[in-house]
Image (tube, rainbow, N blue to C red):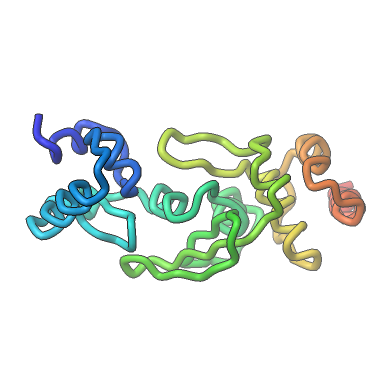
Amino acid sequence: MNAIAQLHALAKTIFTTKDLALVWNANQQDKLNAKISYYVKQGDLIKLTRGVFAKSRDYNLYELATSIYLPSYVSCETVLREAGVIFQHYEAIFVASHWSKNLVVDQHALVFRKLKDEVLYNHTGVINQGNYSIATKERALLDMMYLFPAYYFDNLSPLDFAACFELVAIYNNKQLEKRLKKLSAKLC
């Protein structure tokens, strides 16, 4: 099986240089770089940004967003909008990460929000979707409340506040706990 056929046999749509090295069993960086360069010139691989490639234009945006910085997971406005907790529409994909950075990759806006290591490395409330990770709506709510204490949420009814109260401990933040109690009281 040739190198590109190996990629198409996988469910992944986005590959980092490290991913390609593993799939192709390449342990020499110069040969790997030459192989990647060849397939990009042939049009068999699409270079999206430094060290990140797609096997076709039909790639998963969440997979792209979480492949740029590791560890990371889709969160904040992206998850809350899909859950109906906020009504504002954002074109950008919001990602929890080690870095605060705004990028445009292949005409897609990506917003990375920095979380402290104890929160970022704790996978409670983060679902592995195979090729990317995404926060539950409760984890995304807490990420937003942690990062933006005065953020307004349009619709609290989709949320399971019992799950929120279980998750809040990972932030180790008494002010966040107080804000969560205050927010949950609005439902009563």
